[in-house]
Length: 126
Image (cartoon, rainbow, N blue to C red):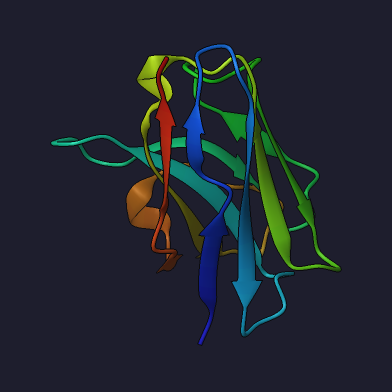
């Protein structure tokens, strides 16, 4: 059984930076694309970034493009989301999701995910 464990959330001031990590436990990560989602109260999770199984392809939502960067280290089974120039509207619970794929693409669609982590809280506030 594949498990995803997020870490790195916390409180940061507007304009600051955070790095979130998603660790894959229980399986090698080669066959899975990974996506990061952000959920705010009363809303569905928004897919903000994804990365293909090899790391060759990445994708970002317009709301974070140019500020967030996703990367993965398959040797360490970790996927990082570096978040810069954070804004109060970036506040939310951040989840990573894993999608079993056999191609070199990735998806930010919530219903495409096969596994989910439990999330980590990010609060951007002065």
